[in-house]
Structure formats: C-alpha cells, structure tokens
Image 1 (tube, rainbow over the protein chains, first blue to last red):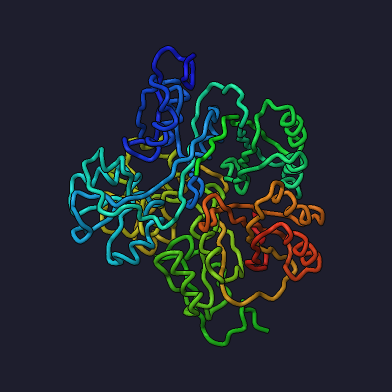
Image 2 (image 1 turned 90 degrees about the vertical axis):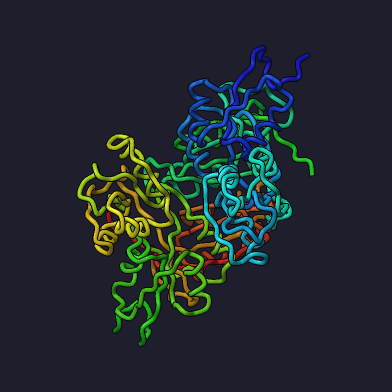
Length: 285
Length: 285
C-alpha cells in the first residue's frame, strides 16, 4: 500500500507562492510531507501558481486564502473566479512572526521590512518596544529576509525557516501579539479528490438581483443543518457593484444531502460553480 | 432657510484621506459643495481621519469604503469596528484613471507609479500598449502624481485634479478598462442625522457560534422585504476565525418596521451596533 497523496509513480511538481522560505512554502512542505515524489517550485506571485497548474507544469499549487486576523487574500479569490482549477485541499498553518537580522540586537536596526499583513500584526509590539523604528512594505516575508541578508541595518518580520535560508539571527521571537494567529492555504489542482469521511466543499455563486436572494440561498443549507463555515463576497469585475459570493460548507458534494441542497439553492443564483470538495484539515490545538 | 448640510453658523473642519487631489478629496468637495463653511483638511492616512473626528478637531471625516471593482477598503471596516463614530453619509464617485507626467508622451516614461488598486485596473491597458513598462506601488494616486512632478521619467495613474495640483500633462485619458468604475465613500461624524425619506442604514454584528445563525439573522430582514444592499465580513481580531459582519439595509433605523426587525435579529448575535442611518446617495447615470 502506498501512503502517498496521489498514486503517481513519477515525481510531480507543486508550485507555491515563493520565494523559498515563505509561510506558503512551509504549508506546502507540511501538506505534501508524506509524499517523497513532490518537487517544490517557487513562483513569483499567486497568478503564476494558478498558471502553472492550468498549463499542467505542476500537478498542484498552494496559495494562501485567508489569515485569521488580517482576512481574505483577495487576489486568490479573484483568481478562483477566473480560473477553472479545483480546490483539492486545505491546510491551516500557525503563524508566528519573528524579527530576523544580520545584526545581533535591536539597537543596530534602522528599518524593519515585511509584508503589510505581518507589519500590521506586529505594530503593537513596536509601539511599546521601539516606537521610533521605520517600516518598509515589501511583497513577502521571505523577500524581507532576503534583503536583510545584504544589509545589517535592516531587520525582517519573517519565519524561522527564512532565518535558516538567509543566514539571519532571530533577535526577537514571536512579536505578533495574537495568541492564536494562523493562515489557511488552498491546494489547487485539476483532478477531483476521492471522497473522504470528513470533507469540506467550497462553492462560488452570483445571486439573482432580487431582495431576499441571499436569505433564500441559505435556507436549504440551514434547514438541513449543514455547517456553513465561511461566507465572503468579492466584486465580480464584470459589472460595477455586482458580487460573487464564496461559501464553505462541511460535507462532500457527492453526499446525497448535498445534492438535494444544491438543486434547491440553484433557484436563487444566476451563476453557480463547485470549486471542489476536499478533506477537512483538523487543526490540533 | 439655509440650504447647508448642518445649521452651523461657524466654519467646521472636514478631514479627508490626503494628500490634496486624491479621489477622496474630490468626494469631499462634492459632498460638501453647497456648504461654504466647510474647511477641508488632508490627513496622512485613514486612521488619522477617524482620530480627528473622535477628538473633535473635525466635525466630519470622509474615507473610501469600497471600490466597485477592487472591493472593500479593509482598513476602513476595521476602524469602524474599533471606533465609536457614526456613519452620517455616503457618496459614490465615478473613478476615471488618467496617465499623468511632466513628459509629453509615453515613449519617455520609464516607470509608472500608483496605488495598487489603480495599477490593477489599468494592467490590461499596459499589457496591450506598453508591455515593457515597470510599475511601483505607492500609498495613493495623488502621492504618485507628486513624485512625478519631480522626475519627468515617471508617470502616475491618477486623477485630473492631481494633474492640476502638480502641474502634470494628461498623456493618456481614461486607461482603466472598465466602463463603469466608481468608489463609495463614507462620511463619518459624531452627530446623528435628521431622518430623511430615502435612507440607508449600516449595521455591524457578530453572530452566535451556531449553525444557521446567518440564515436566521437574515430572516426578519427578508420577511419584511427590506433591501439588503451589502454584506461583508472581516476578522474580529479578538479571536482567530471569528468574524464581524457588515450589512447595509435600505431604510432608517427609526422606521417602525426597522425597530421590529432589529429586535428579532438581535436573538442571533453576540454583538450588534448600528453604525448609522444616512441619506441614500442616488447615483445619476
């Protein structure tokens, strides 16, 4: 019996939002850890992860979808609307942000670099401990670490894996003030999953432009006690003030109860697509 | 009879997201145009607009809440959760993005600066017309114009008013590919509005952690045919994966039908606040 995620004899590519040592890289390593055949490919941006899956250079992609404190990654939702790829998995990763630098202590730091979300999460710490320090926003936590490897007056808000990759010291551990921050990642692919016992299903839809349409959409879900774990809306970009809704529901699209539900709620939509059913990631606490 | 928004004898301050010549500045000028007593104050960021209203340096503030294509301005929603100010007005402004520069033509431009939303909206145009050009993200469309006033190898994606303020040429008109882009702004203040015939009311709430809670929350709204014009969620930041919902409903909180609705839907929430009722902005098309 093979204990791999897919029964592929040969190696397969997994594209992730790079560069190396991002939190997405860490999520990819954890998700595919049991599969020795996975070859990890950093991509420049989330769009490139989608493209590499669409054109089959990679069998899977992995992208951030939402942070517990900072909210949805809009570009990922927007690409899920436009793309035909499926959501084939999810993983939650605890996010602890450390201060990394070539320098050994905070006194020598002139500027702190990071992704805007990480800066937002650590602002309270700096307000109390180093209120005079300057910030610069860059496109990823690991790019921040890379810049710091070239200039010891800089520090990065980044991950322990980035400290290893770029040869930096961890000068302060866990600056983010939240007790329990984490990020959810989606695994995307073209092939549907086998049905598993504990599943989640992601849907997207556009409501008919009628009062009460959202209420009537939710009715068949609520009446069957299906657990709706997320609802989110994004502009459709086709028409101003027109929204696409994203919903996650516990259960598998092939469950009988799900089929009934979907046939009812379809009455309220002008567009509907199942993004995928996938094993629910049980977070150990 | 005075035709002013408030019956203030003296001048009053209106803080807006600056610098001068932002789209928010234009929204402020339009909203308060009939009131000669309004003195407009640019602020560095959205937080400073809220603070100036909270500490009563300004009677009103004006901030972007949502763009038709790019979606919600998360920082504004997050500050509405934390602050005690009211929403006292709304205005929709058509957004046309122009390419501005000291230079006279595109051939001399090395780099294009703008807010990330404006860059996103014009990416298709550059892909077709100048695919080799570099972009740099800055914090506002008008800051982009300001930088361009100092360097003729730069161009900004910005507003006609910014071209005037910073002495730039409009080298390409209306690059954004959408026919009908617009941004909605909130006017914030501490004083409740007089009730008007066509009103909108903004609410925020946290649902009880029970399956079907959102469905049951929407029920009293749908049953009375009240028109829900927006629903949006943001992380509460108090606890991971805990959401605050924002809802806009047509009608005034003092309407009888609204009072009944609210007393019913309060059963489904652990937190509830009326952000304000305000005159609905009728967009002429």
